[in-house]
Length: 567
Image (cartoon, rainbow, N blue to C red; front, top):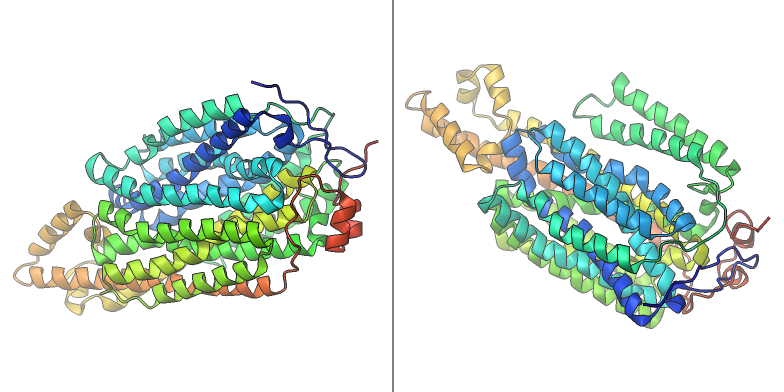
């Protein structure tokens, strides 16, 4: 196997003297792609498998109020680590952080399978997130190292197709494992894929791509993490753990504002090699891409997270069947991802495809919003297909747009920065959706409870019933039926009324989330209208002079945004 030479990126002109694609054999290049795809498969399979099992997990661990926290902990940990991993991989090479992230992810998966309560599961999901923070942005940056922007659409479309494939297999696999082996196996299933991915990445990826001295922006990293954590905690706590106006929530927001302002406006502008470069936002394409992808992430997770809960608790299908019913959405996702990649590769244009995808995704969420509690599986499938066709092509599009606007030696940094703000959008979106669902569910259930039931049970007993376990777990339904039977002849009728109230309340609370998602996607559509369009370039050898001509941001790219001059 041919050795890989160092890639020198600190040219004063900003040009790249040697790309990864030109410095490795074809055989090794294929191994690199295989390692990247396996890493993507590991990350995406975990999300889709766990999503289907979540209704059963919260029923067993009695954690409806913490439903969104299992996802929030994962996103919080991955979000705060993404820009750090991205910058470090630019400085010291992709392999150590890509493979190391997978090892941490696998450790978190094993511990999640051993969780005995919701607190442990949330903590271990956070550990998983620390590993996942390295996997997605570095995988995308590796593709950027190898292929020019005009070709990245096809390869990143393939990566998103892998995500779509895992999204087809994952929900079914998660449901089957949950029904037959137990929900803990949805975490253990990561192990064989993860071991193969680590070995492949360790063998294929070059160990170091730059051999120059660097300064680690330790202070910038610490303040970034210290500011991001309370920001996400504030959104996660608000409305569920504490009221929005409580001192706990307001303290989180105030602390986040101070620390993030300190990081972005004081520490990072003075750092030799900052984790997040504030001057990136002088580039209009980067700034609008961050805003559009932030809103996209905030909007799309409603469908991904809450459709399995709707199918299992409202429509009444099993975990296995709910996973199977998610396949049409993921087939639409995969098909549109591949189609968008081909369109970008053939035309070099991205604005019209982005607007079309956002419009279709918005329509899909509006259709989900209008579903009644009597919705059939066929109706849900139709609406899911529309959502999948919309969001599939958008997952990698903004990454390609941003990478096209910067020289090759900034790929890890700008990719990770975009992913960082996208993850913040997803985390904040999920936190807000979780708050809305919990509050709406409690309000609707209080309004729909039969008067005779409210008079027959003490308040503390009614509080215990505010958990839709009876709609998800047959054992819980049987216990609840026995409890109602103890109320006498009217017990059976009250049980039927209560279950119906439970189903209607949950349906209303879930479908209301899709209206919020549609609003976020519509705002992303409006943002995209103002996006400049630069035809995707066809070479990895791009000088900053050419880039300035195309973007009209000479100061930002040749100065603080561009390649740092060698001293």
